[in-house]
Amino acid sequence: MESNICIKMKFSAALSLLSLTGINAFTPSSFTSTTSVAHRSAASTALSMKYKVAVVGGGPSGACAAEIFAQEKGIDTVLFERKMDNAKPCGGAIPLCMIGEFDIPENTVDRKVRRMKLISPSNVEVDIGDTLQPNEYIGMCRREILDKYLRDRAVSYGAQAIQGLVTSIDVPEDHRKNPEAPYTIHYQEYAEGNSAGVPKTMDVNLIIGADGANSRVAKAMDAGEYNFAIAFQERIKISDDQMKFYEEMAEMYVGDDVSPDFYGWVFPKYDHVGVGTGTVVNRPAIKQYQKAIRDRAGDKIAGGKIIKVEAHPIPEHYRPRRVQGRMALVGDAAGYVTKCSGEGIYFAAKSGRMAAEAIVKLMEGGSRLPTQEEIERTYLRDYDRLYGPTYTVLDILQKVFYSNNGAREAFVELCNSKYVQQVTFDSYLYKRVQGNNPLDDLKLLGDTIGCLIKGYSIAKPDAKYENYVESLKRL
Ligand SMILES: Cc1cc2nc3c(=O)[nH]c(=O)nc-3n(C[C@H](O)[C@H](O)[C@H](O)COP(=O)(O)OP(=O)(O)OC[C@H]3O[C@@H](n4cnc5c(N)ncnc54)[C@H](O)[C@@H]3O)c2cc1C
Image (cartoon, rainbow, N blue to C red):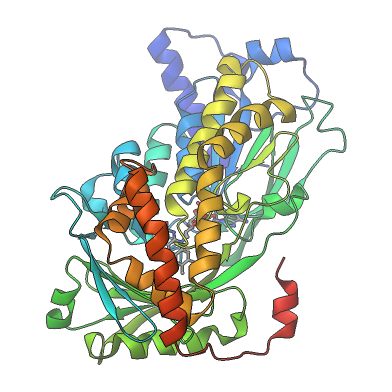
């Protein structure tokens, strides 16, 4: 059952709406909270009650989905978030296009990064950034600030936010055939002084699983597993003098010391830096890699105070199933993080928005519910068409360039090319590849082969690690 507060809020909102419209009779549509939706026809639903959409998870994917549903008057939107002040473990780097596309105020961005240092296993440094225009930058955010902004916006559009942990979902057996069969969400609602929360349930008609890498919605819909990296980050407060170096600067370190299959980073935040790394193939050694990235950064962060330690899984690929009945996964729950860069914030926000827009359209003003096939034919098809090639290309690049020290040396050397920098920034900042030049592409292919040969000849071999159990788990 929903809480009394929620019911009262809905009730008073409905009353104000009635007074605005001049209708003074009490109609069933103004009282939706406690009524079961199981036994009603589509026609009577359209006339009397709104369908209820639950978005589980209030990160970028959930908030950006909820704000679309909330703007549709014919739909009731509930946003579940287990912790409203959650600080998602994250580097917080977002592409420039996200700021405009999602109307994110610039004060949500802590730092505008215009320079990057890419540092090879043998500490060869390449400076990147000359190709950027004065108004171009990579945004560096603290997730507690960005997520709160997006979540508050969804609420301002009318989403009902519930602070509570969704623990399980009852999925009716006939949910694919019976368009009216409701899902029952079990959750522990936050209550002051009660650490476990208050157990409650709510019936809903459609669920968006935006609850990240450990998604309960994915579990409820039997979405299958994905392989994952473990990423680790320490937020380190360094001196003002040290911070000056990172004013507009981010660093990426590659080498088997900092990660056997990813990169280590130093990203500037408001008054500190995020220092982190990740790996799939040797997850038990993550702390050893974290120490190495701290050592590599050396004097630039020496003496700094660790103010937060955070770790979280990062999905490696899509889940086998992303839609089941009227349940759809978005963001990390679906597995939308790119290889090579480990980027997921933009794809989370975008997938949340795309899924919600497609479903709202299918719901025709809240008069009907979509089928699984319809959601697959719209949201999934459009998302895969738009970003499928990006995931494939970055997967290949990670396999080619992050797999051993020789390839990593080659990768850093290649990034000296202004052409490579231009294409990389364009595709990252704007999520499109632009201005490609066939002659430059051909030259790049020659350069790549040359750099790989040179890299392999000079690099020290990767350290061996024995991790059969973990390696076998790699899908
Ligand atoms: C260390 C690290 C560094 C990263 N760096 C970057 C980076 O620099 N740039 C980038 O683009 N990406 C980065 N990523 C990836 C990025 O963090 C994710 O792709 C992104 O957060 C996905 O957003 P989301 O909304 O799908 O999920 P999340 O951000 O994980 O949000 C899920 C939300 O759901 C809530 N929730 C979870 N379970 C429940 C439940 N049962 N009930 C209620 N609420 C629940 C959580 O509290 C959370 O707020 C990084 C990831 C890690 C781990």
